[in-house]
Image: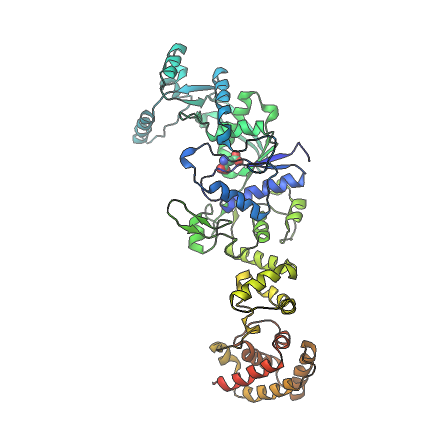
Length: 508
Ligand code: GLU
């Protein structure tokens, strides 16, 4: 294990993991595995008001389903734990106080009501209230009070928060592995709260402290956290931890299918595609959101489609297995601009990955699907069936729709196909074809092909017209695998029976 590479996926358990979050986990995992480093799961649950029961389990199950198993994390062991911030609660205050002592942070006693009034007063003048260097001197905080007064208020139990004190008008220079150098003036930043009146740290303090204590080498996270980076960099400086500061990489947004704005749960609901890896039941109202797993996606397909949202392999290759992704992944090849999510392409990835699975891997899924429809199949039948159906399904739940005609005769005939293919001369030709088929020995795909094609040549019939009409008799529609394979599977008697019955039933 390379101890110099330690990355963390740090979700807050505020709801189900969106595929954007899963993509962040994936990029962290790929980077860690590529460099033989550690992939750490840290649960950032310091905001008790947003805690959602079941969310942590959901996150862990989703990671496991995708094969992104953490090396360290809650329930995974590791020597930097605990890995849930609520269990690390006791340690954060001392860091906030350390900053107060060094003059980089201060106590603020402004009540929520007072701050609200200030906000409203600013708004009425068309301005925005920002708690910053310009205004903090006039507010209720330790920068404007005698030390004894501060002590008295704290001892009296008056609620306070601890805010970071940005130096006015300085430039913060940040390096991002995706975006290059980013420079921000402190004049545009507010004195963010680091420690809350409920005794909990805010995300910013806990995140920076834990990244240092867990010896994180690279912070790889979504672009929505880029505005927090100046504060984080300022915190590293204020603590004197510049030498411990991780490298940063902010991943581009995943955009709606129309490319306008960030992909949301609503887009999935409207477009009929999942945005969560697993099904999620909202504990508040029982509403169920579909998951990739339940919709029939393979984890391999999910991983593949997510990898290409923001990362460019630099070649035309689109299909990747997890080991291939680990080998090819480079943070330098993550783009800056958002990537459009394409639901149709997601289906394509699934179809391709089903095609890549070894036949044997699909045997159990096939038997299960067929059994659900009352068909018990032998191993021999599975061996014949799986290679024929595998290339024709985009999802495992399509197995029956693509294979029922291996087990039953059609009970209806697609009207459009009848109209197109059942011409006046066809019934007679089909009767002759049935006769030839009846005399075919042995009855296997190759002999049958020779027999049928021989007859077509001899009679100088059109190949397409005959084969399409024959398919209509065997399947009832214009779908299904090669007819010689299908016919040899169902056997001579059944083929001939389907043909005579169809010739009788189909009328133009
Ligand atoms: N807790 C943050 C989240 O929910 C973590 C952001 C980060 O990786 O720094 O995404």
